[in-house]
Image (cartoon, one colour):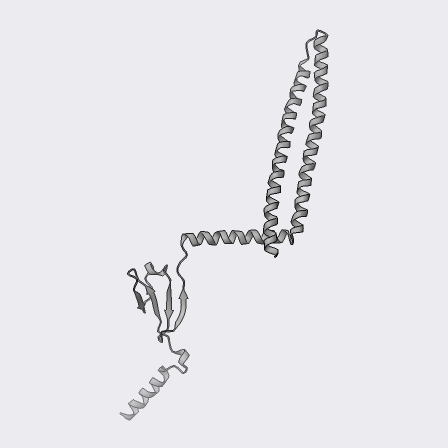
Length: 196
């Protein structure tokens, strides 16, 4: 009988963990149910309550982990907007380290567009001169009682189309200039805010 007890003690000694931290912890899950009551459960949190958030407690009631509630649609949208703004800000700061950088970039872009407008206006003036010369030739043909050649008429029509295209191009450049001006104004304000 004594031998059996000694064997039992030896087995019991091996079954007891050597350190308290080796002992498996009993965890409780604390959550709020559909009636607003606080529930402690050892089995876990039912799926329908997980989205509301919960806490994991040890056997002494100490909070070991807090799982926050799932974000609402409005919160997710706000997070997306904040992330987009942060990405935009990072890109701006990559491009410009100061407000002066923004001003220089704006001046360069506007100068490019002004140069394109000037070239288009110069081409328009050249076409206008060519158009006048062809019209003069056509008038000379008519005054001489001859029929204006179709090639001359086709050339005048082609020049008229080219002039129309150039005028539309100039309008596009001018619209782009306004958009660039507004865009850089916004960038300037944002950079000024970020570098303060």
